[in-house]
Length: 100
Image (cartoon, rainbow, N blue to C red; front, side, top):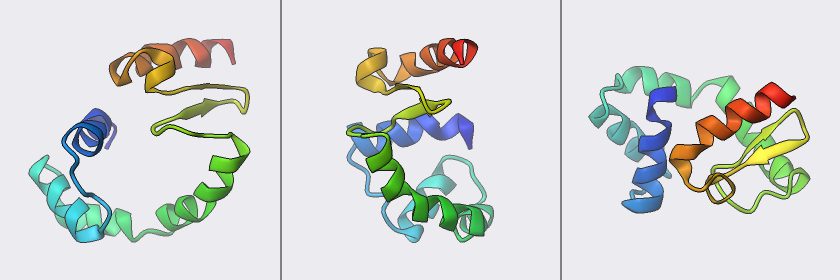
């Protein structure tokens, strides 16, 4: 799924694609070459349910105002605006991880 991060970002932010339901997200993922059954299994997994349940608390805890935002080691973070744009985020993250 890591290979799809930029594609998801562009679909939602730039192309205004609605991925807010399982069916819409699975259809979109299928168009990206992901097996829809595998996608649906992951979407319904306990791991995803736990992450979704924790998300509101994490947004408040880290004062997140932009998505995607990545927090490293509870201390550093980056986002598209902080990095310059979404394509610059991996390089910024590598630097933050090295410093952590």
